[in-house]
Amino acid sequence: MCHELESLVQEFLAPAELKRQGIYDPNLVELLLRQHKQGGRFNHWWKLWLLMALQMWLRSKPAKMAKRDIRLDVPGITPICRPVLGAP
Image (cartoon, rainbow, N blue to C red; front, side, top):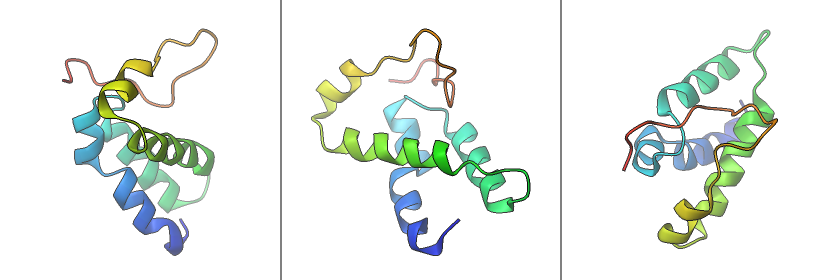
């Protein structure tokens, strides 16, 4: 992963923030990050970029509105990460 983007990854994909939001499973995001840093056959740049873009967008919205507008069940789309069940 580019060193220039590491601070953005740490800010927007921090496990504590993901857990607080309850949208994505922080363990699966962490796995994507670890695999991507390993390199080789793992190149998750587009998944990580989409996650960061969503996180940036969510941060720009009021918390109540952002959570209400997220749909996790889009037909025909395989989710990047499974939602955290029982999250607040």
